[in-house]
Structures are given as structure tokens and as C-alpha cells.
Length: 360
Image (cartoon, rainbow, N blue to C red; front, side, top):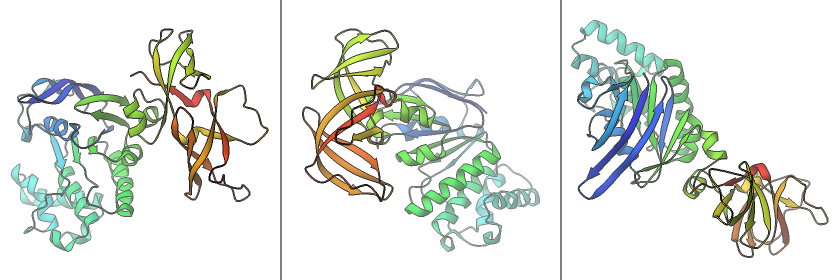
């Protein structure tokens, strides 16, 4: 089932929780609503579920406006952050509960529940109560309970928030495999950028109730539209600049330190326009002494190493660059290379294709 959010807004008194949210998710895709606390992502999830009504706009399931459809008739299922399993029921009884409410005959409900538990590899724990399960097992039980009703839209509200790091990463992989196997359209809420990158077909980045950017994870990572997106999805160095030349596809910009760079144009650009250039730390390269920049390098910045930490496969540096302050740089670690030392002079470059001109 496809999902379309058609210019949805939500207001609580004078507070604008959501403002003109608009995107479409194709059937069978996994969408992550990503953003900091208070950005409106959980409000939007509850509007899709029918727990909260929108102030304006429409939620369309397969092209049908569901504004007047109550939650239990929307063919959606939600997994909450705390899983909300009934503590006095066994795992099997928890999974059967939704079918019981739909008055499915007991024998048929039991068979379907066991099939759902088999999908999440929990049939051997069917007779246990939730208190006898680990966090990961409780999550899988909650997923089985949601999937047993054959929902057209699966809604996940911070589903990995209660798990430790290793288990969270393991469950992300398990959920993604299960979602792809079942083929259910899924909407997941999270504030974890790595989680969104790992499990999503599409990501909707939200901030202060507005949609900052919508697209595939790598599209958003590689070509962020705004300063917020460039710094919230991973890390970015943001350089102030002014448009000096433009041919509609490429821009020659004057950086704040008076040097020039060539970058791909994003949106409309006029001569003299103030803009910002985003460069990922891993896209920066250190020029060895005596080596000149290549023709495809966007700029050369002179700085001094202020801090360095070895992270295993890369070394993370903070480089003090006049005019721009501290820039973050991640350089590949090789056992044959000497690390840059504190206070050492360093020249930084980045390829033209790795420099993104922000739209706003």
C-alpha cells in the first residue's frame, strides 16, 4: 500500500507542531522520519495511525483520504518504543490479541500467531510471559503482534531506543530483512542518523515541524540541501562564500578568506549572492609538503593541526584554519604513514564533486 502525506499541518493552540509536510512513499518501501526531539516526527506518525487528527492536509493510503477512518479500520499496526506487551499474557496470547479483537476463530488465530512468531524466530518462546524475555526478544514479539494482522502500513515508534548498541544494530538488520521479506510499507521514527542510513529506502529529515529534505539515504548524505541537513546527517564543514560566476550548472565562488572554489550549482544562483559550501570531513585530503593541488580540487586551505584521535580505520583531526575556525578532517590510517602532529602546518583540499552548495 502506498502512502502519501499531502500538505499535512498540525497546530496545538499557538504552537505549530507540523507545517505543510508533503511526500509520497511507494508500496513496500521503508521510510524513516528522522530529526531531533520535538521536530514533529512522532506527531506525524500518530496522524498516520489515526491517533491524532491533522489541522490541515490529507493522509492518503493507496490514494484514499483516511481522515474520517478510525485507527482500527486503517489497516495499520504500530510497534511502540516500550513494546506495550501485556505482562499477564504469554507471548502467543499477546500475538493472538489483535486477531481476537477481530473475532478470528481461536484455532485460526493460533495458527496465524504461530506463523507470525516463526517469522521472528520466537516459536520456542511462545509460552513465556514478557518478563521472561530479553529486550530483543520483546521487540520481536511486538513485531509479531503487529504483523499477524497483515497490516498495509507498519508504524514503528523509536523501536530500537531501549536496546544497547550491539543488540540495536543486530535488530536493525533483522527488521530490515523481515520488512523486505514481508513487503509491508513501513514508517519508522528515529533520531539516530546511522539507524536511518542503515534501514531506509527513504528518509524524511524534519526540524521544527518542517520537512527539511526527503529522498534516498545516500542522496541526502551526498547532496544535503541545507546547513541543518548537512550537519545533522553525519558531520560537515560549512564554509561561507559568495557567488562570483555561474553558468547554471557550476559556480565559481569566493570563499570568506578571499580564495576561490568551483562547485556544482544547487538551485538558482545570482552573482554576488551569499551562499554556503558543505564538505564532509572524509572528503577532505591533506596535501603532502611540496605537492600541488590537482585541477579537480575545489580549493586549498592552509591550517594547523589542533587535535587528533585515532579511530582505527581513520584518524580524526580538528584543524584550525584562519577565517573558518575549526574544520573537521578524517584521513585514512595506514601503518606506514606518520600521523599529523599537534601544531603542524597542513594544507587541506577537497574534490569539486565533494563540495555541495547549500540551497538555504
